[in-house]
Image 1 (cartoon, rainbow, N blue to C red):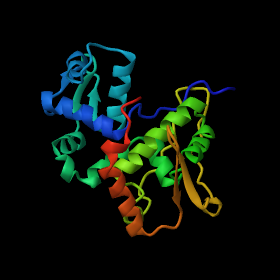
Image 2 (image 1 turned 45 degrees about the horizontal axis):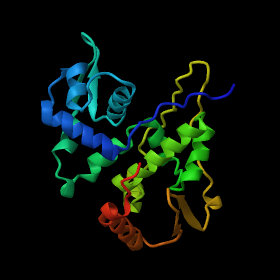
Image 3 (image 1 turned 135 degrees about the vertical axis):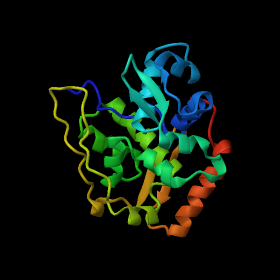
Image 4 (image 1 turned 45 degrees about the vertical axis):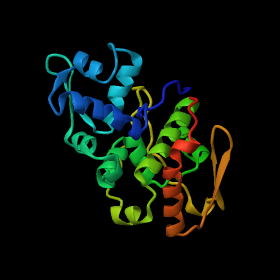
Length: 232
């Protein structure tokens, strides 16, 4: 049976989700509000496909909590409140990483060391019942979150001790059973990482030192405003 819908994954990156969470926190702090008021605080005039996807993403990252008493009610979660209160320059990676790895599909990709090559991640997702378009979008968001939360920091990986639970990815289709993401053989890793971008392909050699990795990440963050195009 041909896959027509991908399993659930956040529609937006964690960085974008935090921006929405800050809007909600600024408006209501941690007070519970009905859906119409929540949507207005997030900048939407009413319910729409995009609005619903944003709410689903915030919930997936555990930045908000949802109750269904007298219609859907939303509030900023304790995790979301801690992150919303952070100054950008002093953000806690502990909470950021917790949010980044809350979506089951991203937790599984990270836990099974899917790597940081977009095409490789897409191939893994395609084997787990993602559509081609869904796999491409999910891989892009996952990679954005890796950079934002510094998830490939060797010390973080070493200290995690694989404590993430292996939650199977659930498909929207009740008739299809979606398997867990399979580990990628480490002995098949390429000598360099080729990351397709909108303009060109970025190539990063495999085997750099931890000091060089940290320098690379700091450099990319400091040049973010200069290297990102305003074009969608």
